[in-house]
Length: 373
View 1 (spheres, helix red, strand yellow):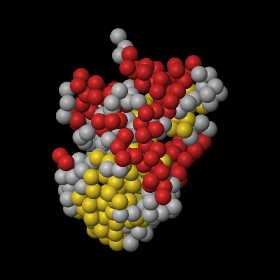
View 2: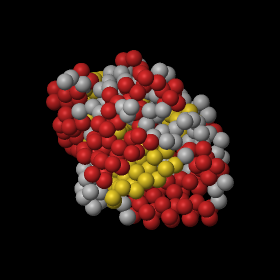
View 3: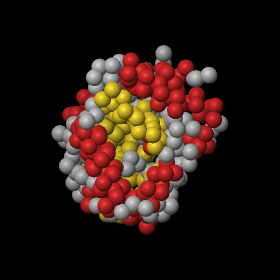
């Protein structure tokens, strides 16, 4: 029997996140077999009169494709994928994995070919900028194991966080969006963190269920050369098959001068991908009240209530600070009391303390208010 929550999630994807219309072309890209959700999204898109296309991908096969990649092969794949993406009005990415570390033994030079010729031109530059898109994970037992939960408990958690009241969240985000739009100086402090930067005149967008599921963030970018200080991230990050921990970055005039982690050599190799990888492309605050702890999945972890993420690599076109890179790496720091606390100031005003918003007009975003029925 199909879980009825699958159809509810598909309805959010088609009717709220993408707002699909008759005649629009939508690419549904599914990884490692989320069959029932893919079918439900396909059927609901067709019911709207849209034109669904499906790419059915397997991560074990992708691993070998990456491992045997040449510059010629990746250029060809990228060109074909780009041609198709140009014809799309919308995109759904349903990303699950039977093994979260499937790509851990793909050599860095091979992953760099994927980043340069496939990920960057097709997704970071074209899909993100030119289509209405929504990306999500799908709950396989491997994700439950990654989160340290039973399969059933994780499925309940997954559907809870993906189907929150995004319209209510969007309304509650408006006062913070307006404050961020007029902010110049941002100061973030916490254990091992003392960071200053400007975000003057950089646009601000709401992540309110129209791009990612789960969602729950407000994002912008720092002025590229304005970042100074130190940041210590307290959330593990699974990136290209490796779990990075205890990441510490030092900045001067926007650039990452020093990077340390549980594998300092590996993190510096990533940050040396290109010049833009050592600059920041995104600053965002997480507000999803149903997500309270990390699970080594960026799509969930970056939405943790009381967190922020500070992202080496490419800026989004909509919140552009001019930084370009092959990578976009959302690194998360949680500032709730359980994770050591911390404070965020906008132009000298205390905005959030220990993960909770302080000004009265922002308190609707605190978990007890946002999660209330």
